[in-house]
Image (cartoon, rainbow, N blue to C red; front, top):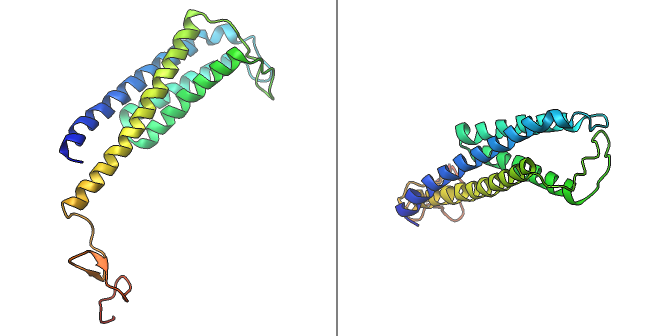
Length: 178
């Protein structure tokens, strides 16, 4: 593990964030565009309302991924994208019926907007997941790099040569007691 890993992984994570955000925005635009046509499909809540909520949440996830640049934002984007993809696939292949306040959203046909939305959700899912994995790798690489460089925090009551507590002492106390 060296500087090469950091110099490649950091920009690659940035690319994943940008692609995930673009895919989430694409999905949001499609859902918001289609929402009006689904307002009549309803139980307590209309499918159009659910599309608007999905669009708003996808925009929020895109903003978090781009501006916050934290693993939590990446995880939120992954959850939004994977949840949207799971819903479109479920309601395409399974006639779930009405579930509580949710309408019957079974729609076995594929049309261009639905296909584009599913592809965008799949792309956002994959790139957000890759971004999370890269973030984890960068975190571990940075931690190992600090330990190798000797920047690890000193443990109170430790043997300075090994940075481990001296046997028989508690942290905060020297070898001879308080």
